[in-house]
Length: 408
Image 1 (cartoon, one colour):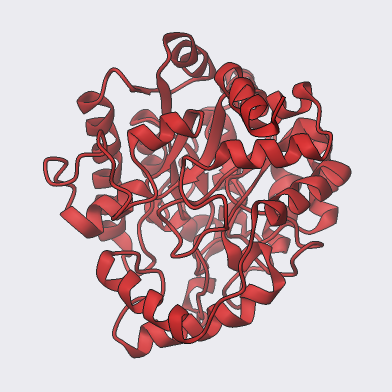
Image 2: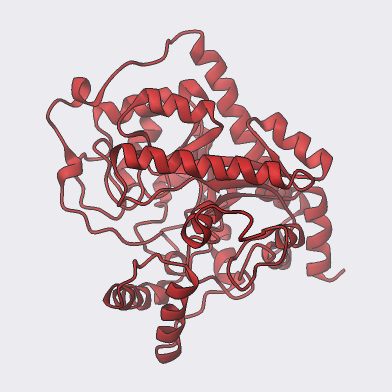
């Protein structure tokens, strides 16, 4: 059978759970969360990477929607914006009930698949979303957030980012308490965006499996946003899952320098370098026309997955495309309809049906279920933490370090 046709058959039975999609932030930037002005129930390929028809075409059965807020928002403003992101995801699931189902547990994910709906989960991208408050962390969990990325592009006061100057040496004492409280709740600790030292510190402290919602292999592309081999090798003992991303500047070495220049061009034109609005993309496309960019392909992503499988093992892999959070995508993976092309490429590389089913569906469901089981045990032994940043870290404030963010 043709590999692409076989891929579609496999995805009908074992659909993709994607670890990271920035559609909620795109809705904020483009239409101020007004779903009447941007109907994702219809084709939106001129404005977005994501809509329901293309999710269906791509064989997506579960999506962690990123309830991301920019590092430019801090304190209460960051918390408010995160709540607005949570609200729009919930309104999306209410508006499209035939296609989307809000999922809070692994059982909810399986129920959505049985119903032929897309399990809609939420992940907060950046610890600044909790404003250094464990009570706020718990409130986000109660609202349905099932992972939190410890940092985004800048350090928090308690954790080092991959794209900022090291200040905490990984995690501070309060950062370790954040990890422990997330484990007690059943919220996955997401280690995408954090420094390698933060990854190692979190794995040392963690009492439940961790997640990398959208990171690839540093040995294949030496970018700080990717996962070093020693960390990949530690995942089996932890039970965690690393979800390979599609962002070209993280997976294709030749794209790194090109992207730095393109980002500088965006800033020179008055745009944030992560701006994916139609206006921002017009600037990007003009730069690309004058300076052709190196093109990542489906094979580039497959190279990362091959390496990650060799180091971490098939039980610890997933997919986190970062659609609608990146200006550029690989050839063959231009939007959420592209997943069958990746599965077809892996079939050509002799990945078995069982391995592909783990990659697309089973590993993601298992890691959430394991986090739930760990939390059920931990809650019998620990009460909610009332620790504070000031009490555990005193006057130490790594967030005051000069930052130089880059990447998505």
